[in-house]
Image: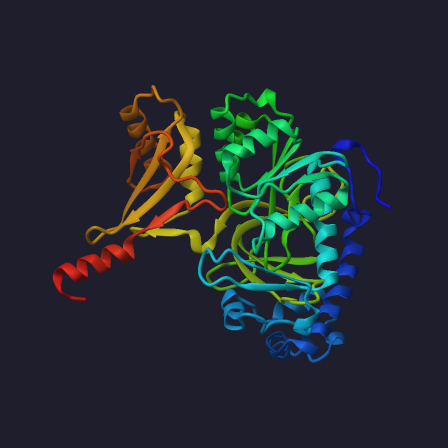
Length: 448
């Protein structure tokens, strides 16, 4: 059923290597089918199409016509909570997932049987692209439940013919034992939780050589190349980046191939655009901007031009693996993760980059933002990589490097090893206390 290839370049579905011209024909056909479903049964989407002069699916003559359709946003999903954006009767849903609610009320996403089948195939495709093969043991430490990561990787692994161990998150010491005893070849988790597992492996007295790990499939949060290198060093595996969001399907929207040179977008199922976060205008190829996706095969909840809030860059140059799809690079995080501190834009990933390049610091950190007076203050809380390190020297070096690379004066507090909070899912990298601080000052002065 599936194309045979060398182990380092296995292909699950021949459509991964469709010529660009053939891919565009398929996308247009599927876009028209999606528009038909939206016009027939989704009030909000039908209104957006009408605003672009599209009253019937046949009115879409080219893919470029999509640019006239107004965006769909997270606010639209929240306003339609829980099932207002369904394009099928609620009774046709076979499963419901929801976003993590990191930036507000969770958004609910429904799946028909066809949606689940396509998602499973997408996960099998992306996991095969990353290097997973039949018979491998997959240790799935993503949380099971409303979070799509757990069941998404589970379904894909089983479809490939791998052995899936549904460990889920938590009981981190037990994770280390099971990794060794069950001989897992693949670890699946968020990047931050992989580091917590690595610490548990070390605490148990194991070395990376005591494990059989070959691959790590990580997503759910932004992470830097420095974090990738640290995970690979501590666990002795090859770390692979996955991208997805529950509004599209979950993981499976894009993933790295064996070349690790950008994440291949599954363009036969998702149309991708990059726009300026400020005004929504398209940006030139190769320029960073906000990612916008349109679903092409979703039945239950098709979305047109959905603004993800995620910042990335599209690469159109051919990949050496032979896949024809565009690739995502420079995934720095969500646009609304960006902090504006004293007029300077700051992404948490910039701080992580400096922390891991400076040397001497462990890859566990939090950024604390406060406003004790008229100006914002930023503090990096981190830990030494070595208990015997000169903490004052490490603090001074990090403060100097942060000033150089961010343009901000960021104070550094080097804590005792193990005291910076760990996460079993998505890491909480920023603690913003500015509103609380303002409220406290107002209460002290009687101006509240």
